[in-house]
Length: 136
Length: 82
Image (cartoon, rainbow over all chains, first blue to last red; front, side, top):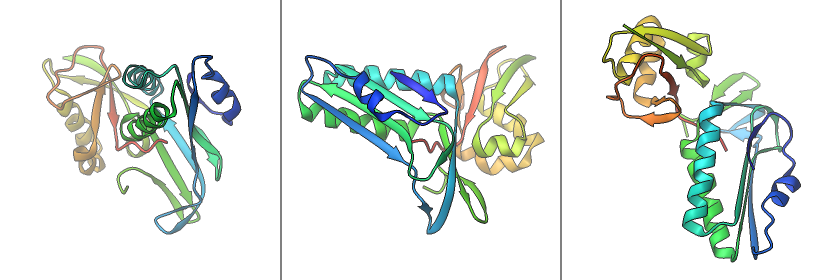
């Protein structure tokens, strides 16, 4: 399941989507929206994506994880639009035969997504708003 | 001249005030030239140029990548998903 959605992500559904009888491990990463940035209170966040390219890259990352870590199944779901504090902005789930590969593949997926996939986060403060990325 | 569509995102979209622009540029233009053409119209984009990646038809390309008629480009500011 590779998806970009504008509603709450159903985490249980993402986990269930990678179930596989030959898997001995499922590793999940849930990215949640934080209430502070650069020492200031964040009121809410808004995500924007270049959807066709982001979906394509997420598919390619999933394929790379399958090849490198013998992943059985992989799901990546990213949310866009307004996301309230504490909600999931991204959920990644990976199933493998053994846990080591699941941890490594999941870490590769979130690290590479954050570096390369064309999705942007805008932080809304009491005194204005800022697109994150350049400062981080 | 060739015609290309340029998709805009995040801070760059806010500067231009639109989600996409259609640009007419000379044959043989590279992706760096596209940023220059847009920055001539929107000078605030100049400080962004060193930080922008360019995608053509949903693939990242280098700044000397030659663009073709009807290509869809995207200017990609530093990403911050996750």
